[in-house]
Amino acid sequence: MTETRRPFGDSERKNAETLIGMALAEDLNDAGDITTTTVISPRARGSARLIARAPGVVAGLPVVGMLIDHFELREGWRPRRVDGDRVEAGDVLGELSGSFRSILVLERTALNFLQRLCGVASLTARFVAEVEGTAAGVFDTRKTTPGWRALEKYAVRCGGGRNHRIGLYDAVLIKDNHLGWLQADGVADPIAKAIADARAGSPPGTVVEVEVDTLDQLDVALRCRPDIVLVDNLGPDALREAVRRRDQSAPDVELEASGGVTLATIAALARSGVDRISVGALTHSAVALDVALDIDPAT
Image (cartoon, rainbow, N blue to C red):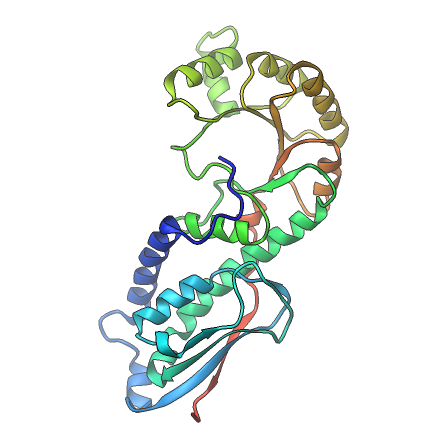
């Protein structure tokens, strides 16, 4: 459930292959690039540089490399940075040379991937910087762009954040709606029943987490010993009390804070002593980093 710094692997590559196919299909359709093929000679050769126009954190260069492979430009590709690097405005991320037609065709698709993923990594790095010196890790959520989850969670790692569960399939998270249904169904102690049923019905080793939104619910949850208790929408003072109660009764249970976390509020939440802070904004509110492809056709 907790992933840190896992490299660009099979799941990311599979995700990228699917998205590259979709991106090229919607951009080229059956006709191809009618501007480039009518204006640029098929014999034209050129070169280009990927340049950061703003400071940030790099993420997505392996996807750019896959796109370059698709257009058979690998011999002319020279990455100058690696994912996770911090860059300033004007820094060169990579250089590319080869068929000028191919460079023009891949330009926007490459930038779409790179700008989006660099944006996620850069925003994540800002949140991580705010909790420096505390024990709290910054975690993402499932609030990702449909179809982009593996890549966006990879970008979170590039920015120094950590991955929460990948989907509904790899960890148990008992939320307020689960508990509300059980309570409406007449269950006397919905937290205890949900945790017990989750333990019994999940594969061995599955992480079990339960969400609470009051200190009284926290006390009940701690008695049931889930792996993690997610404390939703409590301020720093209440979180400090939650940490005190956890340390006293169930020190092996991790505490996670969540709920509308911003760059302005995360530091105070981290100083409460919680182990984890989940931030949906890492993926749902990241702004694309300004990256450009500067072309030099006179090669």
